[in-house]
Image 1 (tube, one colour):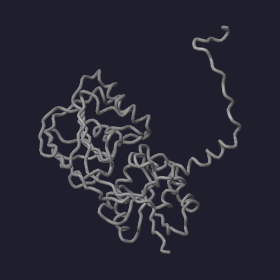
Image 2 (image 1 turned 180 degrees about the vertical axis):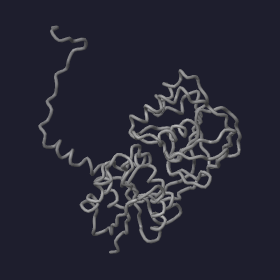
Image 3 (image 1 turned 90 degrees about the horizontal axis):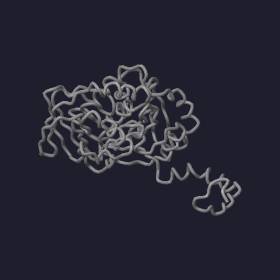
Image 4 (image 1 turned 30 degrees about the vertical axis):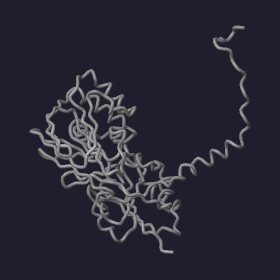
Length: 328
C-alpha cells in the first residue's frame, strides 16, 4: 500500500506556543504505516506559502501548524490543486479549525490526519489574494492592523484593544455592489464570510456554509454608540443577522470602493486594499482534512465506558412545589 506523503509546516513563533511539542507528537501519534511524514519549520513571514507551493505535486497533504495566518499561507497555496490542507491549530483564534470541528489538542488533531477524511471547500478571492475563512473592511480591519503591532496577542489583549478603539473609530462611506445591485451607505464594518466565525467561537455570519458556493456578506451599518453592547451580544449569541442595524445577505461577487483607503484584513491578517476591492467566490477550490463523522463519538467512548462503571444515581423523592428547608 502506498503511503500518504504528508508535510508538516510548523510556525515556531505563532499563537500560544504549542508548536515545539508537535514534532514529538508527530512521532508518537501519526500512523507511520499509512503516512510518510516530514517536518519543516518556517523561518519568516511568507515562508509557509513558499514551502506549500513547492510541496504541490510532491505531497498529498500539507499540514499548517500555527494560527490563522499560517493556515492562510498554506491553504492559499493549495487552491485548485490535488494537495489537501490539514490543520493543527496552535493560534489564538483558530477560526477555520473551529468551524471544521478540528480538535484544538495536538494529539487529537493528529488523529484526524490519520483518518484522511477529505472535504472540498470554497475559498474567497480578494483582489489577487485568497481568504479561506473571513475577510473584512472597516472596524475589524482597523483592529487587525492595531493588534498586529501588540506584544500581547492573547484574547485578553484583543478585547482590551477593541474596548479602547471602539469609542474612537469613525465609520466610512462605502459603495458596494452585491451581485450587480449597488448601494452607498456609511458602515461600521463589512465582512465577507466563507465560514461563520472569526475565531474563538465569535460568529459574524451564523448561517454561513463553507461549501455552498456563496459569500455571506455582513454589513454592520453606522449605529449609535449606545448600541455597542447590543452588537457584542449579538455576535456572541449568533444573532447578528437579527439586529436592525445589520444586513446579512449572500453573493457570488462583491465590488466595494470608498474615498477612504480600505483598511482590511484577510483571515485576521492586516492588509491594505487601496480604494477598491473585488471579492469573488471560488467554489470547492480547496481540499481539506476534516474529522470523520464518527470521530467525536470515538472521543466520547472512554467517557461512556467510565459511566458504565459508576454506581447508578438513586432516584430522588418528589419535592412539593414551594417547599423550603425547615418547612413541613
